[in-house]
Length: 145
Ligand code: RB5
Image 1 (cartoon, protein in one colour):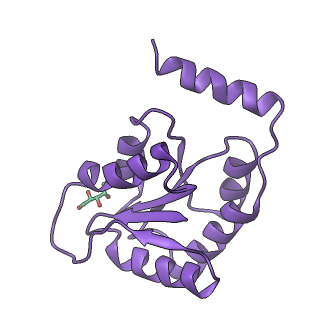
Image 2 (cartoon, rainbow, N blue to C red):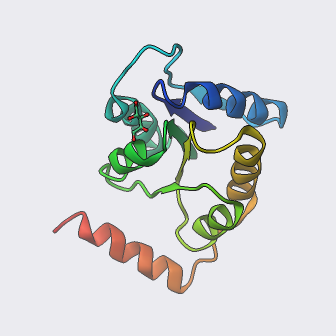
């Protein structure tokens, strides 16, 4: 299952990404928001990050206006590796090298069709492991400093 969530700035693109995933047979759980009323993006990051941390969701997708604030918030949660991607190459590499468990998108930055390509690439690219796993372990070691 993919957990998805956004603030008001990412709401519109979230709805399109959610529909795209469902149309491709992927199970999605939407943690909101469900309107364009103004909210605080750290609050929107929390439920999706918790779902990934607990294993309830395999991965998550988070959106805000730029994707920046919500990725900053997501990366404060232990075990979360959130990657803000605005291009397909980065989406491929963050799956292959960083094993990103949350993909962040900017709802006011990235067009719908490009967002679909980014999501599809991130979901379909396997993690390479090896030296990249060692580097990820070093990221998470920082959480204990
Ligand atoms: C909300 O206006 C906006 O600041 C938010 O969606 C996001 O872009 C923050 O990084």
